[in-house]
Image 1 (cartoon, rainbow, N blue to C red):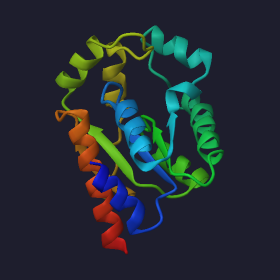
Image 2: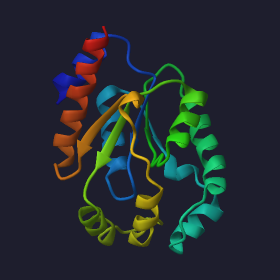
Image 3: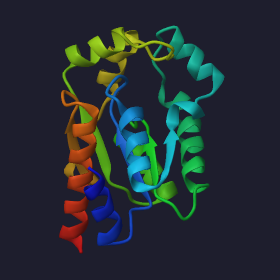
Length: 183
């Protein structure tokens, strides 16, 4: 795993930003934070940028609307822009293409690591989640809102059935492969 991270650093300049996305419970925060550590970058947890009102809505099991999400996405973009000179790994649901397009308009292009799994597996994970405002009651809303990234969005699909270390190794290897293919 470390070898892949070193290869990614050595092959060519690192992407300024990487988005780790998926619905609640797919492990975005775990994978993004580990990827940031492996790449010597900065980890941005999009959940930290929600308004108190958004957090309260989600705590009550109420899904967010577009109007709830736009200020949040603006705050996430600002946080990413504030981290100059280092790779930035963002853990963010970014459920709709329009949200991802907005982030690209604000911070530039980025590859997407898209964490996927069955609704049953994700629901099981959410049922065991503690100390987080996004509970299993939001899963259906998130799945209905989700617009999976298209291939023209520079997407890498990652299967959450794998252990986090394997997901990270796969992500690093595939990012290196993409850099080399473009080189």
